[in-house]
Image 1 (cartoon, helix red, strand yellow):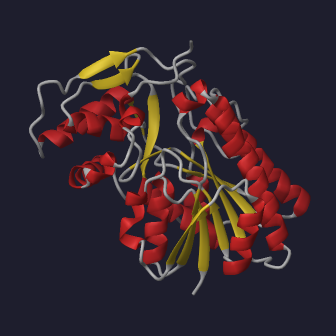
Image 2 (tube, one colour; image 1 turned 30 degrees about the horizontal axis):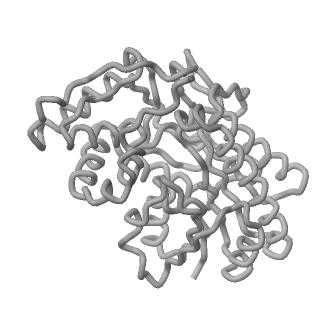
Length: 340
């Protein structure tokens, strides 16, 4: 059975990717350091699955990573281990440098050594559209300049550059992907959509930064995961692939669509109202990427439209309220990331 290693597999995208990989009959090794955003609930259905193995490990721990690589000999490594919340990067940038930059460096060093005797193994580094910075018009292509605005985006840009430098210098078998905003089940409620759903379910106001005019491109997490599998199978080494829906929504419009979806399913409490709050420092107005390359070259395209994806997302949180109970309430409701 073919083995695949996923870093950060207890998080949002990682856990959804593992779910799909196991269903596709891969043996998956999950490495996660178990941070605040990790949740064992995300993979509770696979804990005793014969095709799943979990290791608590930090990707900076080269000895442990070396042991795991040599023990299982995976044919692919998906690097999803990262700090990813912009507000946290404003408040504590050092943890983002440690995880996203140094972590990627140490993982690359481990992979470089492993690949000497396992030349066919692929390293897929998952990044973000935020590396391109504020895109007021048009859509960023893979070869556009990086202009990151936040410490989070800068740390991911740095990690992308590291991976590409290892491809060029050491001829590593690696590929870099940049994806737009993901949404779906198992996402920590510090992020916009699960935060709104949590507040709807607990009869709280719906906080929207500024005037809600910031625009984001949204993709359902399963569509992203299927794209990552397509990149593993058909992607060209040394290439960058943008992954997105090519469709944008302003935050205020997204919130209104979510409310229309929820009204058809539950009664809304009297406190469930949009509330504009102080904007995030340095808040980019718009992210948008051009994902024509992966569509044309690899034959991938998203399948789930936004409203249907929102319905599936809300239903998961509504039917899995225990998910919230395993998270720190402070991490769910406390506002962070304001300049002091």
